Length: 161
Image (cartoon, rainbow, N blue to C red; front, side, top):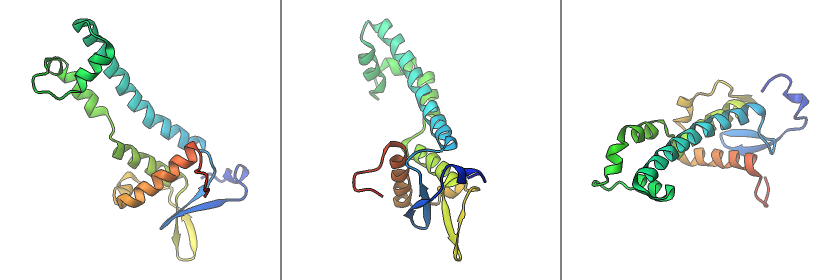
């Protein structure tokens, strides 16, 4: 956080996911929103590309776009459509992020912006946190952090913080 963040967030309340703690804002800060949007934009671009291919298939086969999408998603070894669009589909696959990759990217982003870890008696930010650091986090902890991220983005559960 910048030296000016105190202007926006006076009294901090924290959510502990040990060994980390995170300030609760019930919102995203602009840098987090930008990072989340960037991750989502990449996935959306792949979806649009797949829809373009499905539209071409639907025209060629005289079927609905939905049926073409289903055809493209089938991994049947006799599926001639897959062969015809293999290069484009391979490119989409290469560019697509898995759910795990998205969790890793978003967790890294949130740790950089909000993560704090206790060093001795003092909590310190981890603004230099890297993707490589995130890759060492146990999956249960990663899931807990990702759940916190979703609460901050989409609203907290009724039972609260």
